[in-house]
Length: 246
Image 1 (cartoon, one colour):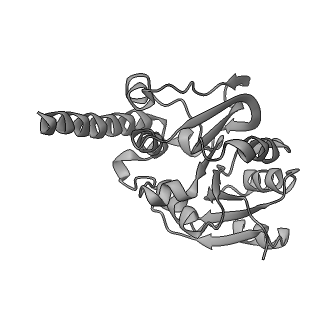
Image 2 (cartoon, rainbow, N blue to C red):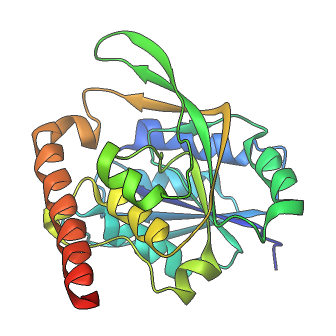
Image 3 (cartoon, helix red, strand yellow):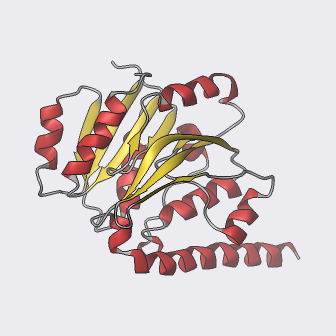
């Protein structure tokens, strides 16, 4: 059995060109205690053939009809994972070759103190032809409230999460279609609400790609709607909690 410290969950759909680069960025990691779980939404572009040709024992390939809700594929990946830490990677993003090693080296002494580790990314916007660095965080003692007030400051492809903590607190990505495609925002808020500690390593360790076929680009107008739905949910829960305490 292959030793695993990280389970890398990659959801994908008809993204063969970029998926190959994403997979290779994991296979070329200098730290090799990982598994890759590719959750394919029944692609018809040769994705399955591509993965089979890579022929890597570290890869588990499964199909899942998520009906356009990526949360379902990520949740399946979490449930199939065998490692202490779950790392998320979108199929059109890539990591620098030493990313997992640097995170592992940090966690050797800090694994009990943090449940989420997030690294910065280089944003490559092919649509507008620009590159820029996105720095995530910062963390604060009132992090849950700050996420509500100031919005999401965490990257999915830039983060690893303590799997045991997720299972213990029954935290998963919300599969409500109203939250898609911004369900990761709700996911981070649930973690913060349950007192998870976030570590932001402000070093660029990956590349996040925006292109004409990006899922988030195609449904950009829905981002605002899903953001509002998520905020309404959390504000409603806070108000109810406050009322019940009186």
